[in-house]
Image (tube, rainbow, N blue to C red; front, top):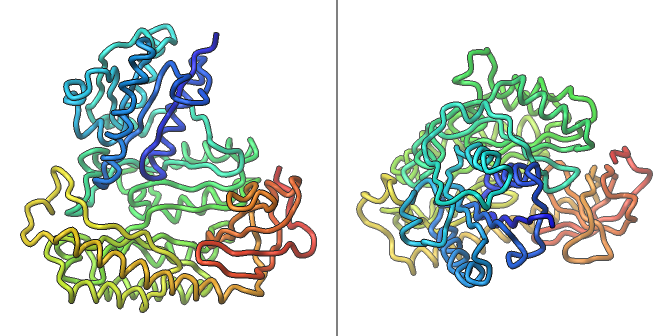
Length: 448
């Protein structure tokens, strides 16, 4: 009987893609995907520690596995990702029913353990791999993709920025870029398999290439992969504002496959707080770069991250952030309360903000942004967009859903044959988190 696995992923796109690699390793070893945790022979919890909330969700999930393990003593439980890296072998002591621990840089070790165990994870007991691997970016691991239309592609690993609130340099190591040739070959293979959109992943894609022997930066990489036959769209996350160059803006303008969307985390609208965060830019510089983006591409959608209640943040600082929302006019934001993270410099800063104040400020930010987002969506009514159709809508099973190049979700009536195609869709109604549209004319291209 085929053994089965279950993977629970916490956190960001990078973790989602890491989970695809873990799934690829298990699939290659002959494991099938379980319908639920109760049916699994191995459960992998791929963790995130960027915020305390994500960490607490992991602990809650891990706690529920006590019963599952009792019912199935042969079950293997693996903890992967940033919490594994951060908490280390202490997880064995706190949770003795955990069998395997490996950090983001050690997914290849997980593969080795399975292969050494004759492709049976059941042979692996109390293994931990937590050393940073300076050559991890050179590894070629199997990947089991979550879909057939869109794919994640890591172009670099780690981070050198050391923002005061962030654990990433301590959990994923220092910055390392993959070679342009490896990235090109991976995306070419994906296009050949029918994937039509790729999202390039990195903690700071704008600094891609700094440690490469080849003379290549991020705009050069974009130009190289743009010509891959069959590839429809290119997206990327995340861009650090400090390293957003005029060359990249010009490249985005000139290459039609590059989507008109950029995620550019501002984090705060206060220069004083940005300095405490060690972000490396001031608001005037940030605003100058967003103005350049809008001037080059008037239809570009800009989204951002905001941390509210950072240590020392005053009401005046908070109001600066609120003013920034209206000044920039973001299409959407991801906003969070500041979260204490072990090992970060922000822990030692004075004047930590009360939780109730943080919650109130976050609520104000989200409410104001909702109005801005809805107003921007209303401006799209009556316009026609190229929509890459992804599947059936989650909110209405009678409709299809897809995204515009600017990453707006569009729901509309269509047929199953439309899935995977690029269609012209006219926006008939704007909603807060999505758009309603109608197909117009003939389909632009047939991609599947």
